[in-house]
Length: 307
Length: 87
Image (cartoon, rainbow over all chains, first blue to last red; front, side, top):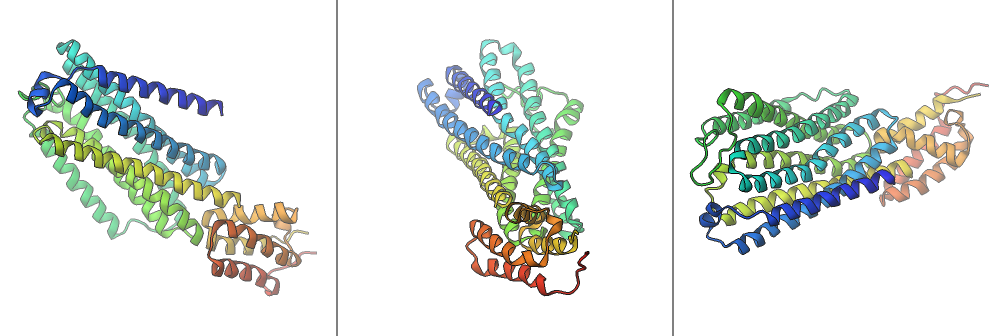
């Protein structure tokens, strides 16, 4: 219970910091001009992202608490060890949400105060975002791999080959778009900011390769959990884990989509504001739904352990 | 003396419905309701065990056909000859 209270306090502090930083940071004039909005309107638009973001965090935290509770309940069993890893990976993703949001808001605030810090802040922001999701996905991948290893089925079938082909296509597209982005190192005249402020060798080593690894772990984790749910024994167990599998798949895939979306910021900024907001809302909704499904699945699984 | 083969047969039935949670479920049912170590399950216990399992499964599913199938299979272990009773 004490540990749970600490989590709530930490989350509350993060929410306050994020809301304050986001709302108190003035919007750059170039952005106001580009979308034809006033400072007041920009603040209102920011609220339409801050409020859903906070609700997402609360939903994510609820999902995390439920799966941690289930994993703790069966911690001394074979599948318990696998679920403990999955819960640990989700911890990185869930805590990563407010952490990356606060880092991003802080960076935005400091950029306005001292434009000379833009490159350093952009690099730090990118690295923190990638690191958190990469670590989370890797641990989830390990956990889901342990689950499928318990099945003793050969899961690396044609479906897996198709998945790898999809991952290869996705990664290739991202690599191409990133390396041909004219504003990857030099500032865009529209946003007054570069996407990475890194030379191409550093971009490949510290951004592209980690992203590709992140997507490999993400795609594989989603595939493993779906295969596990499909092939595991037990009619009632399958019904319960179906929700968790759907939720975990949604969280992993939507997190990948968010990273992909953020990595293409200079491209997205050329779209109109309405479309930008629709994309954000859809991604936020999917993330939220994913964590709620995880909570539902974990709750049903725990019932099997208590009956 | 222990009759662990009967217990393991019961666990196999439980796994068909509860997967990896099956052994934990069966062990818990025997310990909590029959008040004995799981491996000491006897044929005479099966009817009582099936009744308790029926109640427990009612919390997990509304599928009465599934519950009946589980408990019938468990009860039928009392009539199988392929386990060895160690005296």
